[in-house]
Length: 417
Ligand code: EPU
Image (cartoon, rainbow, N blue to C red; front, side, top):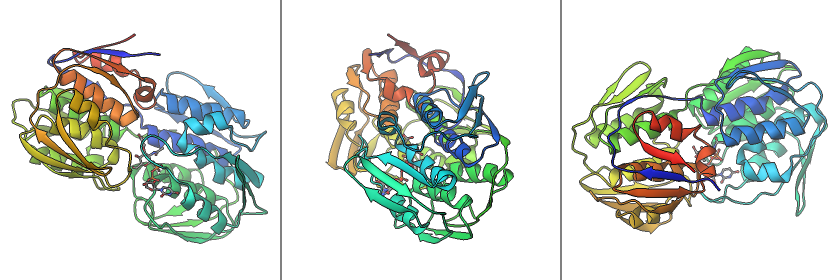
């Protein structure tokens, strides 16, 4: 099992470039099943979650060529299998995205029961109701769900709560369905807008992406196309928070600052001095950190995926911060690890934590529970005194490409063993 050895407390400085967005690339690659034509997707991050999805697509018969770094050519001409393999579906919650395209192209599919995960239950009720609304028949067994259809039909579907992957899944299900689909209370994340822009270029007829109301006019086929994956706003935010926590001049490049407006607002309130350019953000050191409250919210609110890094930042701020995680019920347990490092955090309930700062952090042996808590522990270890060992780095590798090389280049004392 690989670990990170981190020597904290070093001053960081320099530029760090943001990679393509995991949560955008996954959706675009999954959508390739909608057409028998070739798609060329570039700027795909080389991370574990992408490798799992590619393995899944290949197991269904999609021809995939991985050309030069981060460029994939995909062609789903002959779909050989319609069942998702348990071992891959378990590793990748987002694998449900391919159900709609499989139903549309093949009329049947099977996906296994895969249970909850470390950040929360991750139920599938909305997906199942959605597929039924399009006319799919669902048979549930201990092993999983068997879905069949004699032809998907456009529908009106209201999401009972805002779900990113359910919105994307229903868009993908509607594209080849007969007639018109109206989705209400849809998620508005920039990754959805980027996916829809590309799908429309390939011949889909989708209006309203980026708003809670989306309309899709079914089409009979999609053509081939080329697409560059958008920059990863969560990776960008993680690096900026690192710069703020280390009070170091880090310049994050290649991002779209418009995607993180609430982060800039909160960092400003916390006293962090930033220079925000067209496609870069720079931390200007020398500020004094003040505690602010944080409440996660669907886009354009504060992303749950940046909650853990921001909590680390608050351990260095003067005062009391209330961290309110509204989206997932299992996303605050890493605070125990921060306390072992010297932080003073009270976990009030699964959704709320109170951080008393500032606290001096000390290096410890830590275990990365999931991607985002994992990067938060890396940030904590980089600002702590002494050596930390972070285990289970495969969780961090799921979302951050070669993180140790990129952080080393800005002066971090981090190596993989
Ligand atoms: N939910 C249900 N029923 C459903 C589906 C979702 O109750 O059928 C609930 C969830 O339990 C959760 C809430 O809806 O409480 C919102 O979750 P959502 O469905 O939006 O999350 P997701 O689509 O599974 C994506 C990202 C997550 C990110 C969330 C929230 C991908 C592949 N994953 O998950 O990213 O945290 O949206 O923004 O896009 C990560 O990258 O580390 C990550 C977990």
